Image 1 (cartoon, helix red, strand yellow):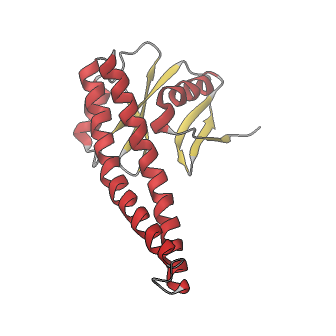
Image 2 (tube, rainbow, N blue to C red):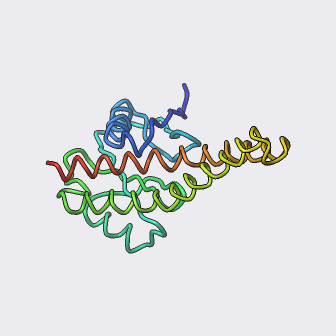
Image 3 (cartoon, helix red, strand yellow):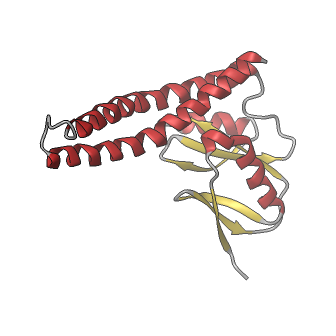
Length: 179
């Protein structure tokens, strides 16, 4: 019988609650989250557990940060890049973010972090694409236009991976403030 299973991540910025519920469902089936793995998760086969998972974003998390969650009943499971952290607790444990102001603060902080990367990516994508198109008008040689086009595509990929989460966090904040 397999002892390890890999499952995909649907996008934490977009489907945080759905992803945490999916991990809890797997835990009830005996597949416990071990760590992040590429664009997904690595689960290990253990005894079935009725646990919940919760996600938090914190750059440069230290021992005090993890101790705070442990005191509230949440155990650190894994982290990605020392910025995205998943915790687990028995079902029914008080959520990490139990009120609107702290939840807003969480998403505001992440939105700002994503925005710091998304804005330069947006500007560079537009500039590089304009430079690439300028070769069609004869303003720059075709080879330079192709070079700018390739750089523009790379910049667009970076924009997608930073801009879409930025928009997702912005939408979550809008919904929270609307309620």
